[in-house]
Image: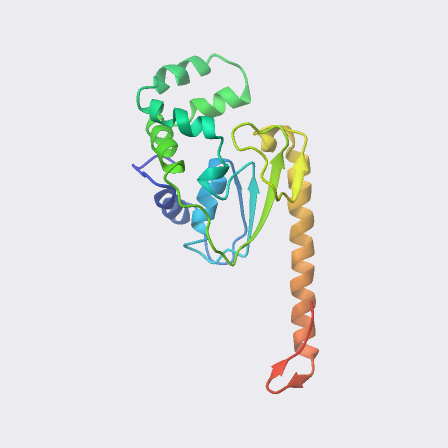
Length: 195
């Protein structure tokens, strides 16, 4: 979606909720900066599950060298870099070409001002690459792949398979719990059942 002057991840999250019609109960998958925005969406909508691919839960998980270089973004000739990237025939370069310079500048500041996910009821699954230099692999990862930061391009099949398998398992667990609660014995006005 076009940059409308959003300066924080929370503002981008609100714009995404409106533009993409994100509703309570939706399951989100966010990669890199998109994962951080998805974390903010969980503060706006009731999101049962969030899959973070090569993303962070807090700004402290982002490479500390990037944090040190972040003030330079204000003087970096992003338009020139984007123009130069346009001559490189790769998906990554073409993806960078499509992002507005104003958005890049705003989000470079926003990431390092971000408060992080915080306490949430959302179940978070993390998919990460062992060789990710932008957001190094955190301690707790649900799927660790032999890749870098662009896992959705280099390991798309593994990511999709993991998400699909977990969606199926979660749906099965919810169905089993709903079934059990309908047939569970009543004790003192409540039901007793296990997952």
